[in-house]
Length: 173
Image 1 (tube, one colour):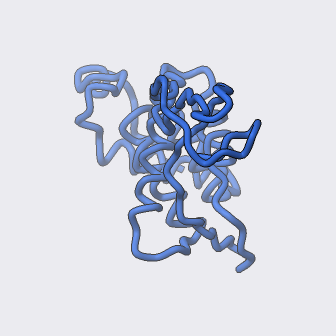
Image 2 (cartoon, helix red, strand yellow):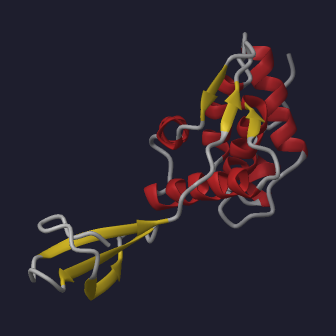
């Protein structure tokens, strides 16, 4: 590692620690020539992923854009920020591990819905309404009926089976 002070090629590591997100390693170094101390970061180099939009345009995968969309869907729900970060991490890892470097926005939307389905039905409906471009109440009713007909087995669901039986969940247009 080149010293930023004297450009000497050799330094020694004084301390290493993971960053908060565990996505990189912070190292304190000391130049063997001038004794100048400096910090370096080591992180995994991710292969660029391209997203193919509905209009066939292409753009680079933007983690923060995905995070914002999921955050908006999860507003005022019981889904924690840590859980949302975990969902985004899992989706990003899925994209990085894929053999393709290009993914459609539909594939990413379905991955998000798969994760939200197990976390919050409200967040699922919110995300689905934007992602699937709901045009009216009929789209909401169809999606709600799908949720009713395929109930969650996850413990994160807020309604138990008895609550479902007592409530009128038969939505008909």
